[in-house]
Image 1 (cartoon, helix red, strand yellow):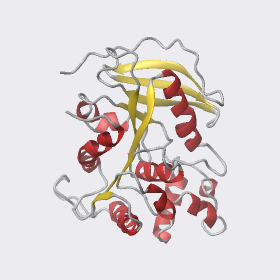
Image 2 (cartoon, one colour):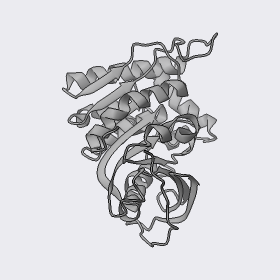
Image 3 (cartoon, one colour):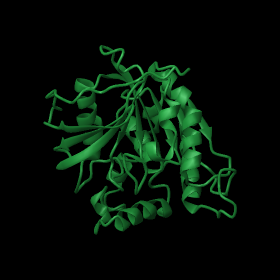
Image 4 (spheres, one colour):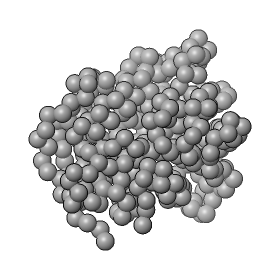
Length: 306
């Protein structure tokens, strides 16, 4: 049975350690709440969408396990609820799902010269949710494309913070070859950044900074948590429209995901992969991957599904 969920008006004054705070709360659907957060890390205000647990209202003293769902490039915090059935999928699972804004091409990083997205997500948002929205400390994280990179990067750079991690068509070896590097810098340039080196610096001169943010370089830190990595081969698959063409973006994420899985297995990590099936860089496949990985993610954080 699906329970009715009500959210009281936001009246508390909890702040993050650096002064970040919720300045507006909007209910946009029965379980869906958008939080506007003033962020010193971003020097502005950004939005985080929450999908509340179905028992939120009738268990007012409970703390909830958390799933962070990260969006991809050139999209925003609304994309998971806009393009997938994540609300229906989680309708009988007591988990707090957090979908934060990450900029159209923020790359889930504290930039060398620009916004501090990692601080926003893993310090400011996390602290606010734990202090004011009953978030527990049992967390999983998943994302698609740029968000798949973000999920693996955040987990690898913060060992122990997440109990399970999933990447769907993720950029998991950002310096794999010149095409990998050019893709990231091209997206940054296309997003209106005059200098794509503002993110991690020059790929040669600042190779150490690129390596510091590259999930592949920190794969050993992912041992101990169940991992799920998926990507299509880039060839049109069963969920594509007739006449669909080969997708170079998905071919690249498949290559990077494949080398990442190989390294993880070499290091003894527990990883489930889906890398051999046709499919393109598109939402139908990401929804399918979310469904496939959801039970594993939920089991790891103590939120069993019906």
